[in-house]
Length: 129
Image (cartoon, rainbow, N blue to C red; front, side, top):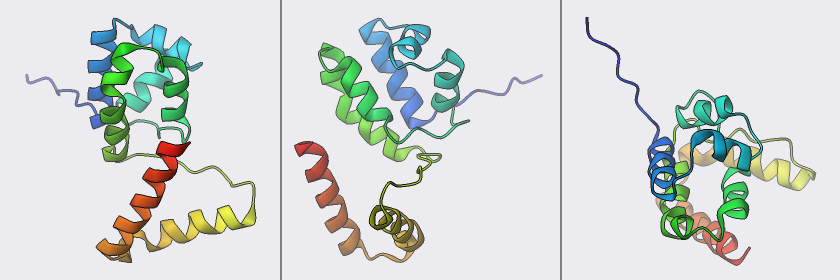
């Protein structure tokens, strides 16, 4: 009987590569990020959504790690490629809530030009922050 092969998300694959090279165990990473090992497994295997602040948490914890410096852009890109990406929390201001809602409702109908402009703005903001 054939066993079903477990497939990782793009994020799960990148995190495993990072952990192997940096010699960080799953339980250790979970503790570093203040989550359970099970929760880390769930997001790596697309059973749970990646928290909105996940990349920032990783950046804060691993910013001085030589392997983080090597892999952080690829890890960020892999988060974006993961299907069950982010569950947005309620926003603190009505303006931010409206922006999130509009974006979610309109993304399927946006032109490539608009998507590129928004992406450019968000990447600039991420790099400056």
